[in-house]
Length: 497
Image 1 (spheres, rainbow, N blue to C red):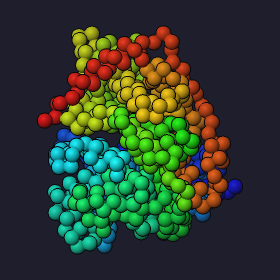
Image 2 (image 1 turned 120 degrees about the vertical axis):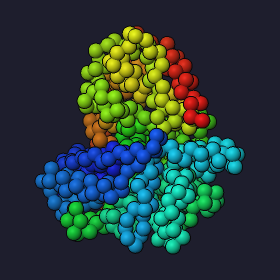
Image 3 (image 1 turned 90 degrees about the horizontal axis):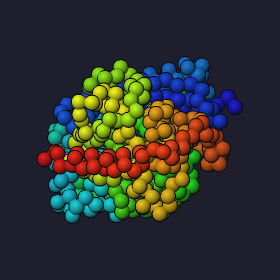
Image 4 (image 1 turned 135 degrees about the horizontal axis):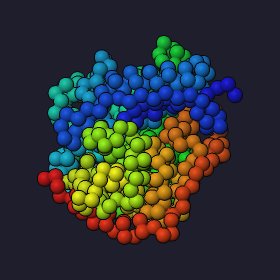
């Protein structure tokens, strides 16, 4: 088969393009980082034009790496950093402000106001599956309307277009103003039952519905690329999934009860709950896992953790105790344990299962004994402990204890962390042969839409196990160490007033 599927994976810190064959193997790739903009403490922004430029660069780079041209590409899939919010003018094509990133906390006062006005954090859970939090896109858009005159002026003139990053890229690639159900489900503006924008929610948030993109399924043809663009050919853009939903598809979690955990800038565990909308009683999110064409939507419970891989970047960029992210494993391995130090990385508050906007990062248990190696180990362990909290919530909500966890993302090459993760969870941790499951999931959606893959069985057949970590029966990570972690978390509460 001389045709391939291209996947654009636009993440929090970088953009990459990967090209896959029918067996789900990558035959070409290119990746570039983009600038992280921090205007104030707790604020995080990206330049949408820089992201678009990086996108064009990585498309050309991946084609060159695969020694292919656009003529070899049957379809393009897109996956993205979900709640990050962009507003641009449909006439000029220019962004009206930097993108406000998912982890940005500037909407904290709005969240408090909405809780008081509408009856608490879970006021809109029945319609949206989500708690009121700084995480989601709807209030970020409300903030832009309130604080950026150009946004409100364009909205009044009917020229303002809102989107998450997928919508921005699809618009740049095809000229169509479109999102999919998975990204729309992260705005707090879509009704999770009807899969359409909810007029009541838009009114509550004060959002003009004319700004919103058309909601489509995750696998259908949205438009075609321009022949004079980076692909150099008119190719169907036919797949679109938020990054964690794409990883769920890439991990072939197509049956209720199957779950995956992605270790990236943050950590995101998703449990397939089938065609049922299942509301959480334990601090998880209800979300759309995927919707392929005309088939019914598949739903999921999700545990979202804001800061995991970003903590390792912080050690590198802000503290300079490592020169590159992979060095954290080497440094952490020079000590046998954390020396009594626990690191709670609540840089953007705490997400699941706490949803505490008032929390901030803390390191506790410091003594003169602690070295930078202990801090590095505590930073890695924080990822594993936060994942355990989410798994406990998921087991409680679903009533079906997970027996193994499929993993993917940038941190799964860290063997020290993965063994510790198995020890903390008390279940096997399994890494697939293709660990780039986010990009693969977007490729699967696009390929399904154009008949490159016929069904999910073909995708499931591509999945293969690379490595498995089993819990050490002598470890106290799941008992005493986890107890101390839970104690450390309480020290992060009530800091931001």
